[in-house]
Image 1 (tube, rainbow, N blue to C red):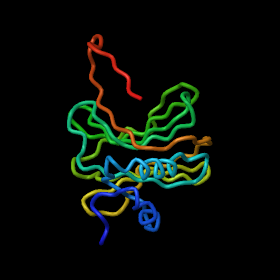
Image 2 (tube, rainbow, N blue to C red):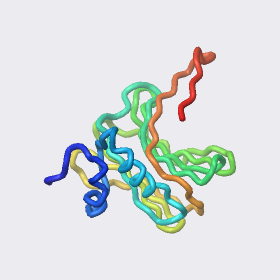
Image 3 (cartoon, rainbow, N blue to C red):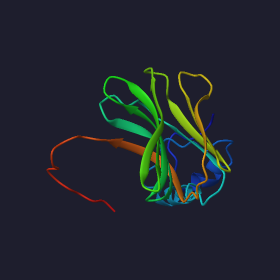
Image 4 (cartoon, one colour):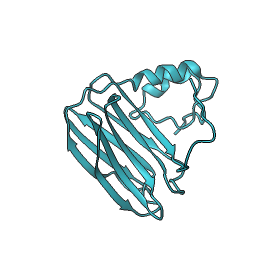
Length: 171
């Protein structure tokens, strides 16, 4: 497509001129580009559509990746693909007023999901996936009023142990 393989600070206007914003590899030195693109995803209670592509799928128990939408510490939604011990699972997890629910917990075959996408229009939410060159497939729709403060990628691997051997924090 004539697009650079690695994006640098001077590629901001080029990226915004595209029909879809999808930058897989941003140079570690491109701090200004990262900051400017990050501001696009600091969604302050507006309609949006965001997608994320993944180079591999979760392959070990409790690994997951997806998208996270946050109102505050007590209210958020996660849309993700997780390996739940023997199977891949599409998950929508919600925290509303500190209470957790999982309105979607659906097994899905390996190699089916390369990209995840969420769309918010008013109070209507849509969670979709695609893979293997196919079009977008709707996995979940939901109506929920939410004052969105942040949107972004989610990736984690949970390890169950009796007590952590170390603790660390990062700024």
